[in-house]
Image (cartoon, rainbow, N blue to C red; front, side, top):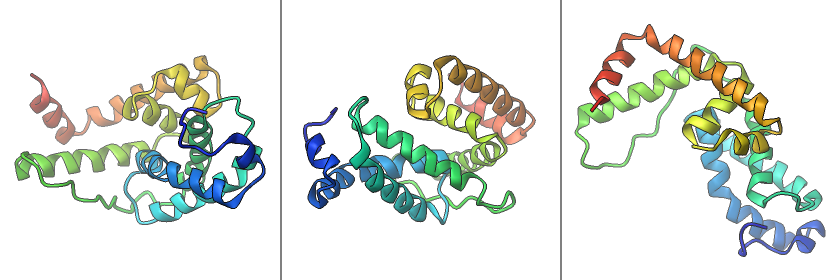
Length: 188
């Protein structure tokens, strides 16, 4: 296991309530973050998080220890995210949580929120496997081989999905004058 704070594998396999509870408590922030990155900020994010934790509670007793617990949890969380991809209507607006106050001026924060909203609108139009590849590699920063392990596919399949996703996102956002302006503003 990748974290000494996780309960022993034998306790998880025995489905000891305290061991499962401890493992889920440790994984909760990661599960929430993974789902938020895959799905965006949306009204049913709490439901998706709860569904992922329930799926993890059912799956952890079958965990064989062939990978890290977090990789196993990430894969299960992705399976839950796939079920939520099509649930939101295409026209429904993305509800973003306002960022914490910082030194960035209000106009820049508003532009960043708008860019994020437009990016997730674009991601909503991608096929689920390409969306997962884009978020795992471009948002979470995983290497394609690491993302492939999480997604349960080959590294070559992940690279292909990522390449297609990047091309489609670039194509869709290139016609967006707002995103062009933002990209030019960010150049050094």
